[in-house]
Image (tube, rainbow, N blue to C red; front, side):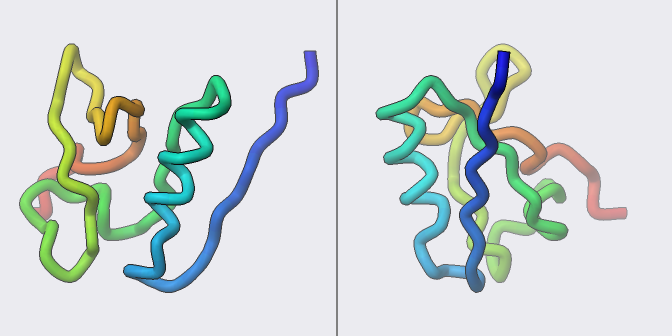
Length: 75
């Protein structure tokens, strides 16, 4: 089975996450963040981290699983 990967790139605050969420609602897809700062807990300001919630050990943003965000301690 061939699976496709869609990359959405651009500067902080340019709307990448919202585009990804729209795609995920139309496709069977999830978001994997590649942001070097959004991995840290408590550092939402300055990283433009989407404000989601943890459900069953998964970070969920607008109903979409959002991986590699908000899981590391900053120290």
